[in-house]
Amino acid sequence: MEIERAYDFPKLKLGKVKMPFTSLSLREISEMAKKVTPYKESGEGKKKQVTRMFDTISGEYDKLNRVISFGTDIRWRKRVVSILASKKPRRILDIATGTGDLAIALKQTGAEQIVGLDISPGMLDIGKRKVKEHALDDTIEMVIGDSEALQYKEDTFDAATVAFGVRNFEDLRKGLKEIYRVLKPGGTLVVLETSVPTRFPFKQGYYLHSRYLLPMIGRIFSKDRSAYRYLSESAAAFPYGEAFNNILKEIGFIGIECRPQTFGVASIYIATK
Image (tube, rainbow, N blue to C red; front, side, top):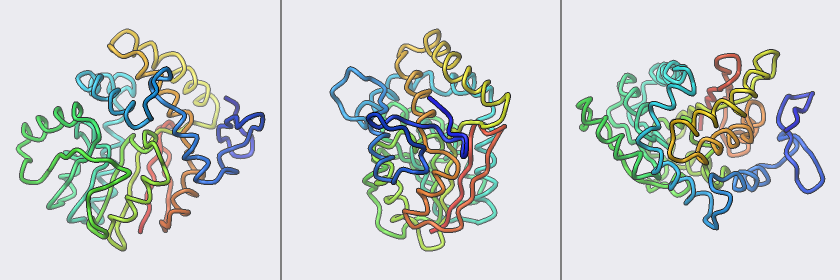
């Protein structure tokens, strides 16, 4: 995968033509996202494959996440919480909540209700146990749901969060439109997602980590080797930085801001409806 010099965005091949994310429409980017799947030999759609993958690795996900990120994912989530705490949201929707780490941390914002939504029953089962261990059953509700077909009315939530989940959307355009729909006017979206460093030596270090170290850790510790190859590939294919800012703008969000984290290996995006 090449790096486009002007913007340092990954180029993807569309037929015989290579082009940076900045030259693609949101619809074209969404179509490409569908092609990055965990099980390439499967005839299932991306959504079903991602659900099966996270169900399979749910028991090992938290531990491997700490190993793969060297624990920095905890610090990134704290920054998401800090951003929302200043806005004092009453109702928060945490999409792709997984095992509930961010949903639980969001209690520190003072929110009265937090909904953790995920498509994977296996991940949610672990999340529900963690919520109970923290005695947060009265504040946090963990529910099965599809990020691209949210079961909530328009203008329901004061804030929405997604941590390492938007790159798993089968249809990025549809998922972001749904988030926009359920947010109240003036509501805040905060997205924490992987990105690709653009400066030496962090760019080279990131490449070695994602291309070799992450799949190797997956092979050693996971019962699903394809899962960690997919996590690496989906991170590399995600339209990060200004490209993602443009997508949010196209959906209708305003006040968009991107804050790179830890030399650019992740980014926090903040936007307002």
